[in-house]
Image: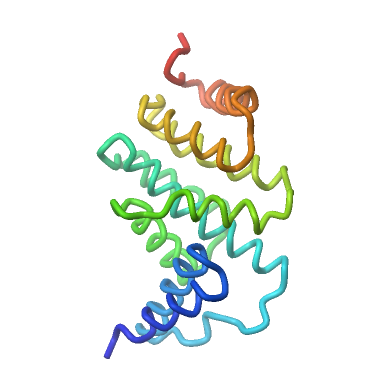
Length: 187
């Protein structure tokens, strides 16, 4: 049966790593179901665990933000593809990133749990948290502007990650200015 890998991967991932682990475990299990055995490694270290958390949260939250305004645009999909190229993902990693993006678009996506676990995995690495947040702002700006629903989600994401309102506004302004677009409330 072609669903055992997803079930076991998701369950083991959840036990070892909460919601982020479940997302990544389910994705790896799916790859296993499709004949890509060996995608997971036992004895994952702190750096690998942080990298996996960053990867999982980045693409799933991108999917969530893309869906925030009710519709995922081609520009938002292209932004995810562009990030995959920048990260130099191989084919299996691209497939996992696409699956995570799709999971983020689902109505029952556990945004807060994913963000809280990601923050915990970062162990106060504020540079990594900032980079993650900037990627999400870039995703929201993929079509050249930020929808009010996307702005609302970004503010929530920033708060869960531990940024105060001033820092959130500063980061959004920094990214939107660099992109040549505008966020709600800017002229």
